[in-house]
Length: 605
Image (cartoon, rainbow, N blue to C red):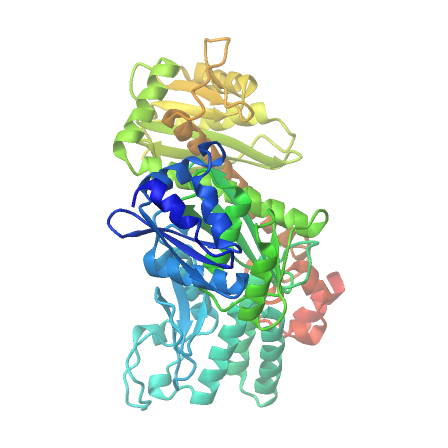
């Protein structure tokens, strides 16, 4: 059908809610949209190109036919639109990248001995689904965590418990409770599965409270081995809950969403908050977003994501207010069974959390673009050539090492080294250093120390490969300090440069003016990526040291508390402050802490 005939046909569309379906010359569905007034909405596509996005112009060049379906209201239009998109996967609709194969965690609680497993098929079969997750790696991490705390069976066979059944490796390494051998009763196994489900739902306090009751009962019944096992479960849940806490944030259950677009790639960062704890976080990449607004992308994500999950909270906090958010609220209410609010906060902790989600969405797009770029060897090689030519190097920078310093007001100063080979990270070669020169805040002296230590070990087994380029995270000052280390070591055959954070300026020794690679160049992406990797590695190391220091500071002063008992106390209670608050009886529940030692702890803390 030619465009003029199609335009005349659209003029006869009804002025009622509905869904329109655009097809190409081969009859393939290439776009599905909803409308409150079908005729007005579809007619807008045939106006001036001035108001249309580049993607829409391409769509209209390909459209040869348009069908429509009328419905009673906007909510029915939204549901029908979603179903048709799932059916046809139209090329021009915004979509989760490979969204139809995103993984879930499933458990079938109707079976006598349920298990958790990963699946990419979400069907209405009575099973419980958690997700979708952004990757199979996220699913494996979550399943491993549950298995460590609440061991469950992995085997798919129909269980017929018998004491003569041979235990598998999972049982021996305490990742299965052994229902096949009758070691655990069916009731106790189901109780553990229910706690796992509550844990996945973020109900940590309820799980801990219930476990404490069970532990006390086991102790009173002199089932000390069982009590000790439950004690370890409590400590593990507390560890997770402590690590997921969001300081000064709302205690409401909520999902926090933010979108970010860069050219033809978008990401939506989702934070899942339950009882004030960040129980999960996923970054989803979307395609078909060129020319769209972040608000529109967020609306489409909400439809795609919540149509594929049964876990809808009463509050969805957003960084951008989605288009048609009132219609979304009505649709989500139908899924949840009670009211759902989609709100964009203006101030306060919720706004801070939404802003954090936006920053994470931006980072996700950058990581995706870099990963996509580095997956093509020719692009990475092109980037290395750009670096070589721009910096004036006499050879290709096949091995690049980058160094960064991290401290808190000069204390616990650490350094990190990230390594890229042929434009790609080689994590096994990453290194981290404790700065030895003391705790006075001096990044320049710290850079000089770490570079001197690196150069002194050229040719050692741990540092066998010579770098072609040593990159410093910083400006002229940091570069000069590194140069001093080079001069004292008598090294002049390794290229040295630094990269500043603000304008991505690159400084090289012997040159006064900075150099700038084009912002969209592959070479700058590689340098920025290795710099960010060094920064991330330094920050994570510094965070670990701070945690160890805060843990050790008080307990180190208690007589008879060595590393083993200290670790046991922190694992059980979660923090030194919790140890301080515990009474003598609670302290004796910890492995290795008898009554006398418990009284010593109370006396000194």
